[in-house]
Image (tube, rainbow, N blue to C red; front, side, top):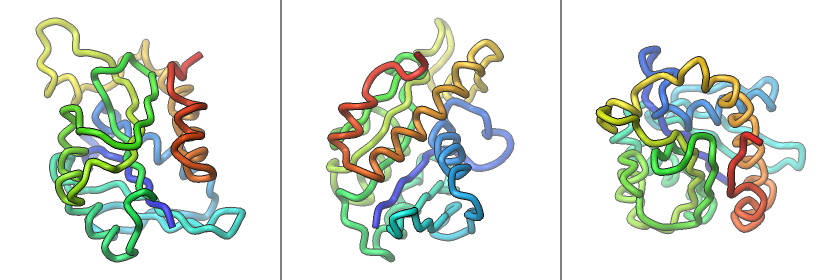
Length: 191
């Protein structure tokens, strides 16, 4: 069993913000599995999926708000006894250029507070993550304000392409492993 966690904040106010990139990627991936819809479980929107190879995996979007994502993830991990190497966190990264993907199999949170809370709750930094670049804030805009801003009209066409490729990247991780996903998808994804 594998668990993919998409980070974001619940509610319409945050739906299309940069900080919700994890939710957006998982929504794109879910479109590929007809008949599967989220249910409220583990303080989040949870989907149990059986793929074409009869393998089970889970999608989870914590609804605890970003900075408390660890509560949701730890509950799901404990309930299903998911090995730590079978967890992937999808999150935004303002240190990466817009639409750039970067898989890592472990490391610090890099300042991403939702990821930091998950690492704290699970007691390890050895958790795979897919970082999706949202770009740096423009001058005079605070990072905490920037991540809660919607994508611009100019960015949206590139974003739609990037979300599909990010969903492909998550599917690669599900089907194969982190090494395969890193080799294939680390780099700019909008080209």
